[in-house]
Image (cartoon, rainbow, N blue to C red; front, side, top):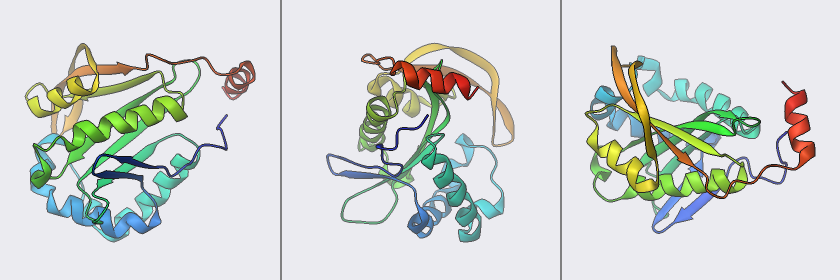
Length: 204
């Protein structure tokens, strides 16, 4: 059962970065990010429809994401500088489960012009820690294509460890791609109160 004391739309400040969970007002911020990086991100992402790059498409998507965030079933974070609304990158947490796995899956992307500044490393470390501290996640799972060396370095720097390789794991840009499977374990995870576990069990 969700803890009502936890913010459903957190803001995280780390160094010179502001990381916000997406909300209604962010539609006009997120669309230019994906329009601007459409060609750059194509080799690393699932095939997108044209609607993905429109405000109308994102209005519907943001409503869905906000509802998931309210129930701690997903989080979608936008990375920016405190002095600018321009989105520099995104981090998404999906497949969020409590008892008995306390786990989720993370994905992310970074603006082409923001590469090489340590932005994703710092942001991902901060959002992982927020989930550990506030949503009681025990395991954050991630995966990357073997040829994506930048992603491998980011995950390793943040504390992810390799757990295996999955053949034809995800359909990326129209092709099935192998992925390296990684996980980051919360070293200070504590079991929830007994009543929390009972509630989770009763919910199936």
